[in-house]
Length: 102
Length: 234
Image: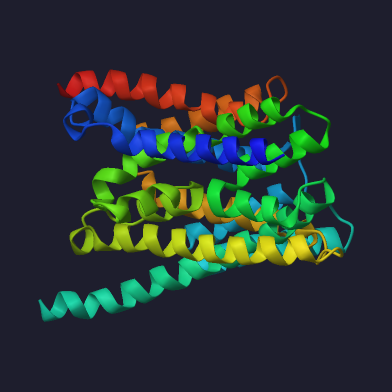
């Protein structure tokens, strides 16, 4: 098992490193610059969508969806970060506790 | 100068507070990871090595659950790499902002994950000459690193778990936290279309490909939109 643990860890570090090793002048080109600026927006938005609707490979609507709606309302009212996170947690936990959602 | 320093202190305190709360939320999953690692046949040192050295939650869960479901070591390793690929895009974006040198750069590379990148980019890049972005990245990265490893250890040594993180609504809390950090990054209609396009592609692919691939595939949206809009600029 040490093989899997170490090979996995080395590969994951290498992936993080590769992104930082690209020469800056290459990243300064307009098209590359635009793509790199937009990459985290696409990846993080995709991650939020998957974390809200995916259960392994199934798409489901469960307690996370109303929780994210509540968080969106909090964001629209310019609530501080911690309040947004707590709103979602309390909403999902309450819906599950009272058996209103899974 | 005095005025800038005056504004910096509340801004700094808020960043540190938010970084700590992200660390605490993520740590609850660290306990689950530690417990999962040792109950699926890894030793305590092996489970700890994953949190200390791999340090990217999605890859760690993927590696352990692939092994647990009877996958070969090689399959588990490749699946963990696939999950970690998005970190390459994050470090591409963060490196020019962080301007870290020498050993600091190697540490920054290790701390480059979803949460630290999202926090770093959620700040105004120009604010306090970039100090806000840098502090947000470092504070979040270090807070998650310390608490994630502490939590992994607690989970790995205790047979009984603290309970399902979902019953505390933590799955929704982490999604909402990342959402709150993507929100300020969307400053134009182009940004919004990239965010929505990325989310839709990931959801459309979820039933058909293995976990990790849908999020990675969302990169296509930013490549296409970046190509078209970048060409107009040049």
